[in-house]
Each structure stands twice: as structure tokens, then as C-alpha cells.
Amino acid sequence: MDDTEAMHRAMALAAGVRGTTSPNPWVGCVIEAADGTVFEGATDPPGGPHAEAVALAAAGDAARGATVWITLEPCAHHGRTPPCADALVEAGVRRVVVALEDPDERVSGRGLDVLREAGIEVVVGVAGDEVRRQLAPYVKQRTTGRPFVVLKLASSLDGRTAAPDGSSQWITGGAARADAHRLRAESDAIVVGAGTVRADDPSLTVRAVEGRDPLRVVLGSAPPEAKVHPALEFSGELGDLLDELGRRGVLQVLVEGGAHVAGAFHRQHLVDHYTVYIAPALFGGDDARPLLAGDGVGTMADVWRGRMVGVMRLGDDLRLDVEPAVPTAGTGPVPLVPASVPLGSDGVLHGEGGR
Image 1 (cartoon, rainbow, N blue to C red):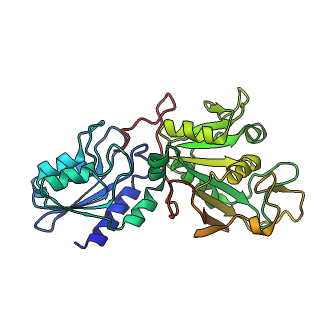
Image 2: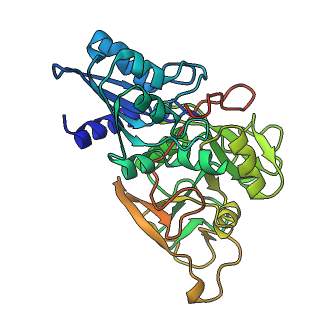
Image 3: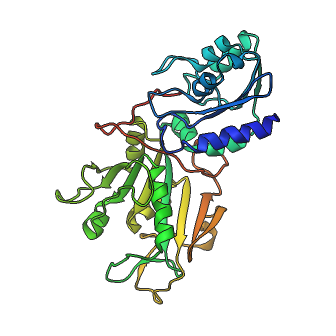
């Protein structure tokens, strides 16, 4: 099997578990035995086996002398599961192809060293940029301590998010709203302002698609009877909030608004990825609510510039995916392929770090 073809298959396997592995990375593994038989695996939810262990279990004795393709460097430390690098050595594989070295300081390079010291041929970097995109939230959190920030916006053609009376349901159609719920399901936490909670009383749960609800974060205080509860209520600097969420193991946070919260994240250059749903609707005046509230730039020379990295039609609406022309720290020059999921009852994601 060709290295690139096999790595793309491993990426597809990883994408299939995108919303179930966090705070561990979503990883895919493909094994080709000496006789050409192929075995596959992807990371189980936290506490379960990693992709390599799943694929090795499927291969059994056929793993001896096999070639293995993995999207991320195999772990070399004991977490909830034994080291995958040791398992590959014990299985007697001949060659291991890795797309990306693990950025976690407890892993980085150590898994590769274990394989090389055992005499296994190791190749690193096949589809590396693509896998770095796929694992962008994991890479950012492990290298900066902060989660990957996705700002979700929905507006009319004239850039408005609500009528002058505050009504906003619904600007977009059902297909776009379902897609937004997929984005929620791929996020570990969701942030809104207390004003949005008081005005709309959102539940901020995942509906219309399968997936677990993210940790709900309210900037300020939510009324005791609000649907958003239980929620983390936070007052302070947004950077401090991201630090706290990073400590809790959150890989991706979805910012849903309102316009003042969205504007604050944008102006502080805290957004890694913008997802904007555009409806073929017009409010027709300048008194409707804007996409971003607050003071903007004073001159054309200071206008924020981004890069369009995706356009998708959803019913009558469009989804636009935009990344900053100058990426935020730790993300690198690559766009998002969104991240995910389960939190413990204490509001903390329980995983192994690294893998």
C-alpha cells in the first residue's frame, strides 16, 4: 500500500471518532500484514485503547513483519493504557510510518526513539500538514495550554444578527442550524455572555445530531432558573478564561455570542477559526444588531484580514470558514477541521495528556 494512500485512510478513521476521544487526540491506524491483509483501528473514548492497540488486536499474529501507518506518534508513557510504542515493538512490526510527532512534552520524540532502538524502520512526515490541520485543537492546547477557539456567527446578507427588538430566531434554515449543532458536538466547551442567556435563555445542548453536550460557560452570572445550568460562570479576562479551560483539558471552545462577546474575542485576537453562516435575508437598515458589537478599526489600513478556507451550501444558506491571515499563537498556518467532547461530572475532561 502506498504511504500517502494508507495515511489518508488512517486520517479517515481518525475523523470517524472526532467527537469521542477528547482530551486525547483522535488518531487512526492502518496495518498491512506481510501477505497484504489490512487491519484498522481508531482511538476509543478516554480509558479505552488507542488506535494502535485497536489495530494490533485486530491483526493478532499477522502484525509480525507488518507495516503500520499512524496519524500521530505512538505514546511511550503509561497513562490509562500501556505505551503503544512498546506494543508495536512486542508485536514485531517491521516498519512504522507516522504523520506527526506528538507535541505533548511527555511524548514528543520518545515514541519514535523506542521504535528506532528496537530496529524498526521509522518514517515521519507523510501527510504531516494535513494531520496537523486535523489535530489543530489538540496541537494548540498541548503547545500553548489554551484551547483552540472557534467563533460561530450567523447573519443576514447585510451583516445583521438580530432585529432592532432583539429577535433573532431564526436567521438561518434548518440545515445550517443542524450543522451548527455538529460544531457544538465537536467542541468541549461553549461560551456565551450573560446578556444572551437573559435574552434568549438557550440550553446550549447538542440537538439534531448525535454528540455529547459541551461544558457550558457563561461570561457573568446566569439567572438561577436559566436553561444553561449547570454552567461555569466566569468573570474576568478572556485570556484567563482560556487558561482555565486549557487546565480543564478543553481542546476546543466554541464561542456563540452575543455580538459583544464575539467582538471582544475578535478584537483581542483570540479566535483561531471563524465559522459564519450567511442567510439570504436582508434587514434593510442600519438599526438591526451587528455581527460584532463594540468599537471597530478607524481606518482601512487597520482592517482585519483573513483567509477563506471553506465554503459550503447548506439548504439556502452558506457556511463560510475563515482563519486569520496571521494565525494565533500555537496554531500554525493551517485551517481547522473541528474537535471534541466528554467532560466528567466535575466539569473536567479526564484523559491521559499526550495519549
